[in-house]
Length: 192
Picture 1 (cartoon, rainbow, N blue to C red):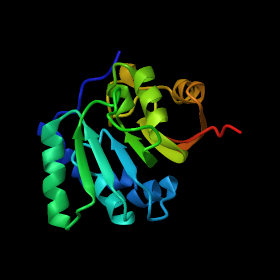
Picture 2: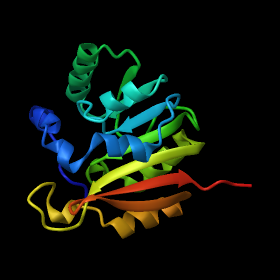
Picture 3: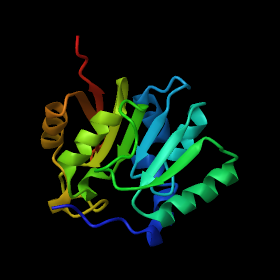
């Protein structure tokens, strides 16, 4: 069962400066291994907490995908304020991505998989649009009782998510940003 969608009406919480303590942007950029010329997809981008700094680190396009048009409009306003012109917005769920195969060299999905009803379909689509040498960074809540984050029953156990990613053809390494948040770096298994 998927968790409740984070409401655009609470979007200002996503930009709270304290969020940097749990999701350090510099560490996210490092885990993405951006070289400056990658096309990036931000899945469940919200109002652009990660989209904006990623767009500052690549000369190519960053595509922000979110089901809530209101979130994408807030992101557009923030991009204008920052003088960024390399961000595209796509109102969509992540279980169907209207992009050609191998479109993106990097992808990020932060705190979105627990909200997805069709996780397997979403993983299949993400695998399809990430290029052969691409990298996907996933950030999710640990399945533990912390005050922050969604209810325990909708959180995805790290081991189960890693197994699903591997079943879809990703090689996965994982770690923790802190005691409540884990990350996974997923790369497509290369076929020889």
